[in-house]
Length: 280
Figure 1 (cartoon, rainbow, N blue to C red):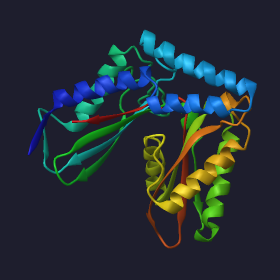
Figure 2 (figure 1 turned 180 degrees about the vertical axis):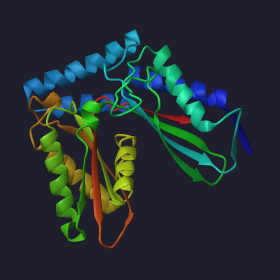
Figure 3 (figure 1 turned 120 degrees about the vertical axis):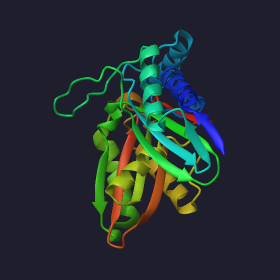
């Protein structure tokens, strides 16, 4: 049995919260540079150059990539042969978030009640999903979700007869309506199947997939490629100022569903696509 101290979890989460807000993922940065070579719009090219420079400045000066340092989402995969020692795992993750946002001088954006709107002043609580698996593995995938992009999320309970064309139409309509709001070039996360809440979880989790990693299912990979091309043909472009780079990637996750349903959720990520994986 593997034993992991809560102090280890706190430290790892704290450091990840700071790092993912200061450093653009190398794959995302490479995505900017690749897009720069193919972007048809001069303005779009200029925006991509600015995004690359912004990433350099943030890294050099240890400053946030964006002023909206987001709400933290944690996907925890924990083996049945792991024992957390010294306290509760949930408390440790929340404490790591609190320390990371305090010590990293990151903006605290969470309100304790969605109606009364009083700030918690420490960017907690984050949202945590748990997956219990075999063995002694332990990993946490963290995302820092800004709400310029989060507010552009949409869900739809399609009919099974709507099929792939229904999914394509809904996704394209969602991105088109979002326009410049999610700060493109975006990552498009799509959850298909399960129930409404499961589809939303799938869409969120898909955003944490490495940029150059397509779905392992051939028909879903084909749909991802089709959607990416269609989205970039919309002409929204970098930061919504026109161009051929509206999205860097489309990621789809699926789950079995009811014979009478086809739930679809679209969750967009801004150009910063802040995320970090912890393996202990």
